[in-house]
Image (cartoon, rainbow, N blue to C red):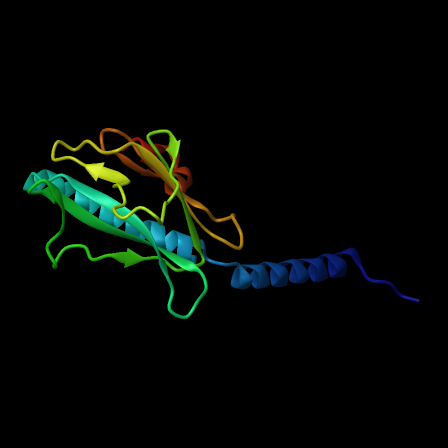
Length: 182
């Protein structure tokens, strides 16, 4: 009776390992396609735009959040809109800037504003702003997390300090140390 040589066994193990690697790479989910990642990217683009818009136009601009019922679902959507303070009140931005945006109902949005956990109160007729940008560049310090309600893994975190500096925690953690210094 003849057995397998060591080289034949190593070749079979190598082929099995290579096949398993290819399968795991093809089945692995791309975090950039996840709703929390996409919504965080959109929110950060809006925040960057509003910060610059506020400084260039001399307006105080704030983000207001709300929860809206979905037409075909039982869950609520988190929505946010931007308003500027003019004539002693909060007014909509011009139509060509930032319209209200609603996130998928599968996303959970948690916020901590100036060290306090934000709790949305649907009974309030006028919701207070959660994030305010002044023309000087200052902003409301806050931290927020976006994640899917079915699983908290893949959460995306945003931090904004009093000077209006915005940090996407997961993106900063992925950059090599030499790029963080730039």
